[in-house]
Length: 207
Image 1: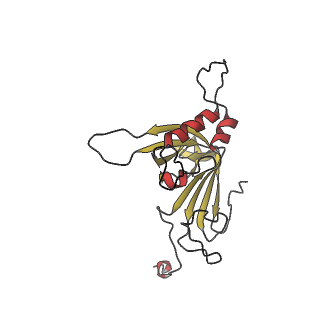
Image 2 (image 1 turned 180 degrees about the vertical axis):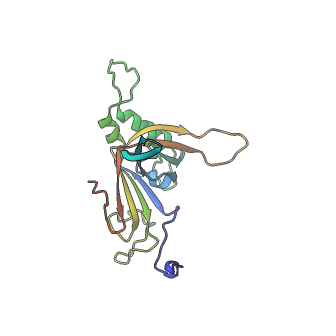
Image 3 (image 1 turned 90 degrees about the vertical axis):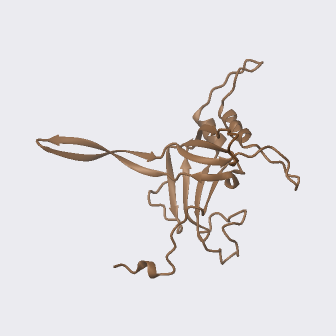
């Protein structure tokens, strides 16, 4: 029987210790409720020979793709400190507009959504699974606003979605019989992902 769990230094990653950031949606790290993590799947091709079946590895796909993220739906309202809050749906629909979505305009300027614009509108999508410990060098904890991203003592793993773009948004349904917080579920499509562990090891050599 392994005695590995008797080692107090062993620290499992925890579901609630994470932060999500979008390059162009600064409030998302405070609004995220749930977030998928990327995974890999290698396809298989069958080859049958007499009464036997053999399998050969095929194409690589990333799953889930699109990635599902649930956000709290906040309203556009000034807070007591005087800073202006941004409505969640306004922020998300603005990303679609910056991606090229445009309905008929008076000047006849017609646009459609393109990949480069869609990727640029969303910005870098980062998922940080946080470490439980304080950064002893700076005194910063993972709860600090700047997180000191890049300090290996702050996060346990880091995912960067490559060429990510917003595929869909689905606002929560309304219900007179419920008092839950409203949410918006979004789907983020990506080509592949970069993974780094706490020591910044990048096993797939993704740049």
